[in-house]
Amino acid sequence: MPVKFRAPRGTKDILPDDIAEWRLVEETFRQWCSRYGYREIRTPTFEDMGLFERTVGETSDIVQKQMFAVMPYGSRHPVGEEERWILRPEGTAPVARALLEHGLLQQSPLVKVFYIAPIFRYERPQAGRLRQHHQCGVEAIGSPSPLLDVEVISLGFDFLSSVGAGGFVINLNSIGCLNENCRPRYRQALISFLQSRERELCEDCQRRLYTNPLRVLDCKEEKCREIVKDAPISVDFLCGECGEHFDAVRKGLDGLGISYELNGRLVRGLDYYTRTVFEFVHPKLGAQSTILGGGRYDGLIEELGGNPTPGVGFGCGIERVLLVREANLQPKTTDATVDVFIAVAADIARDAALKLLYELRRAGIRADCDYLARSLKAQMRYADKLGARFVLILGDEELRENAVTVRDMQRSEQRKEPIDKVVESLSALVANNS
Image 1 (cartoon, one colour):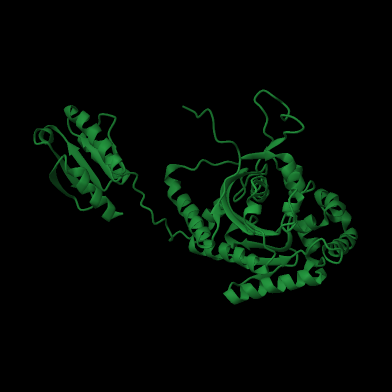
Image 2: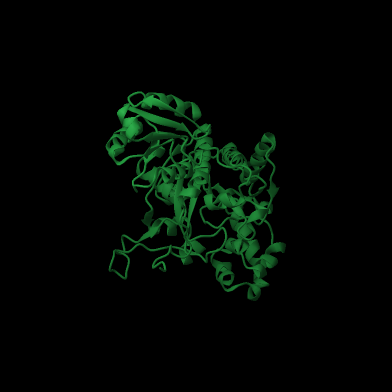
């Protein structure tokens, strides 16, 4: 019988067999964030469109092409001019909004948080690029210190290295600040360079040339990438403060032994970035080579109505991490679904099995039983499929003796044990096995 419905194009189901690896990545990220002093934050899946128009940039691809609008059922239009909701297309702006709204930036001079969340962008689906993907990220808001940039980059380095996603290259650049002797000067030099080849640029880049020329450097069209190879680079136009900041970032990374490559044409795709920008790129990913990226955003909080407050962070695509993880570094968590399976060898034992199942679960033991009235042999096969370490067999004989047969599936051994003692003994065995 044909399937009537499938997952929307550009999305993927995460099936039970995949969850162990997902949990490994997520828990490894949580552990490293904890070591670095970051606390978890969760924001709504949808936000006001104006949040991203104001921070990401009205001329960015995200705002121009990639946002999903959220509408009430039965309506062909968004909910209203004051409530234009969209699914979250990136993680930093919602976090900044939440910290500002709830006064967390007034409670502490430096706030360090992390998130793990689904991200939505209307893009052409391909390997490493989905319309719904999952992202883990960190934000450190409150300090202009270049050492905080170093900390954020080193956290990304440690996380990817320990989760088995090594082999990446860190691209590093500084795009300066809005001081008239810094990025505006570079912007004009870039426009002057690109004007001579304007007609050769793709349609999008011809539009970007005068509205946001730095976006041309981020274009994925091969023709545009070839043109910008000879374009001026941002580090040659940094003001004194931005130059000192970038030198300190490089010195800090050198001191930690974290290698990187300078990429003068790296700008990232969001308007809120200032000074340091970086990307971790991986050769296994082909065109979608960025596995983790971020930078400093010293004007973002002020743009949202807060006091001038510097910040720095990164976002990392979990699906891309899974694509490059080394096959020999499998999750340490067991594939077992349960610790104990109760096999019922006689219908009369079902009530006793249900009570024992309840007691096992109350004791913290993962337990299950048969609900399909299968044969004992079929139940044993199913228990093996679930990865159960122990099978408890209940039948006529066991009920008469007020006992249960305990079979150790790893050792192929079995014994009888009083039914009122088995939960206690298995609790110790399961704990040791874990």
